[in-house]
Image (cartoon, rainbow, N blue to C red; front, top):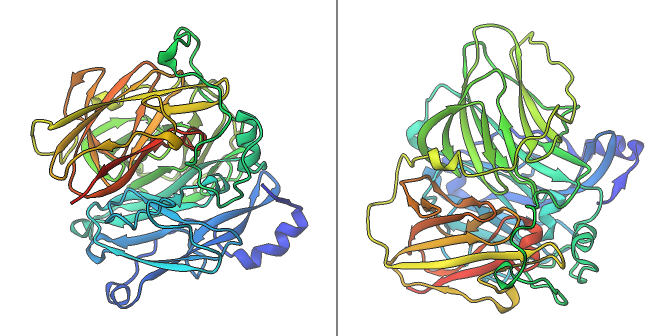
Length: 483
């Protein structure tokens, strides 16, 4: 990651404006019907712990990061590539028709510098979503919130607070990848992160690797962890009202870090995951894997005050976060590390979740196994024993109810994401239950998670681990079917 001096950073702030502040913007329906909303892939300058860094971003012409729109208006967006390298953006959480999903060469090619493309399709699922590059550019913060409001909730008296978490390094993603694998291929910033890597010597866990080896959790030590581009020693402070209601819309846009969300003194009520409503669950600590989102409703006390909301790295002490504060609330300085490490994320929270709008009850037509394999030595990651370069597609037929049982035989957890669909978690380790509807599910080492979805959106859809470097070294295949 290119770094700038403090003087260069200060000289550049006029150009980047308020790009580090995430504020919702709702485009008027009449204007949106007349022309697509422009979102630009561009460069930005942010301050990370006193150092300036040049990163990427997805911003509107006025500098507003990301998009907020009503589901009633549909998705009418023009993506413009203002970078000096090819790029493409995936609309994570939406279910577009095949060809508008934003995965390079599935089937859309990368946009060259200066090119633009108009997307248009209905929005089936309002909620907290996001958008990001499906290349190594994701590590360089080419990501932003994508909030789709529900027309039936217009007039609800609650304040939205949108926060995107990320892990940050001053190294380039190619350097980070080379540190895991050895020399990286000459893909450049625009190279697809899903390409298979040559020269890998890792062996699948089911092929004789010692399964008693200790679990691996965090394989990259980052320079900082960010919440809306800011570290915890300079957090974003959201002004809230006494006795008001806040809806946190939290997005884990980190490439290789899962977090524990801690609401501290405020008990929260989880009301949605991955943009889909759940039967509310109260608590103060919530897991959030890479690619996942969670909506948490909070009640602000009838007094002045300031309440930190923290995101601490699993199995580590590093943390980031933001602050909710009333007028006159005393915002205290916070350390970027906690007092003690949090455990690795497991499935205990997942097992307690229930979908508010579950799939219709129906017997599965297909139940395919998907083995999640790989090793740290050689850093090779596989699905059903194969990397992306020699992938074995999962073939289904339109109209089928499909179940996939993902069994993790590796020693790292994997956030598994299916494009083009929302699925319901229907079993953990073979125990059936009516779990949440999601698009990304965490599968810890030695565990199995079964998901169910209806094959109602024909195409060739990516299924992959949302740990960027697992995907980059092969952990991706496709679910394939035609009309």
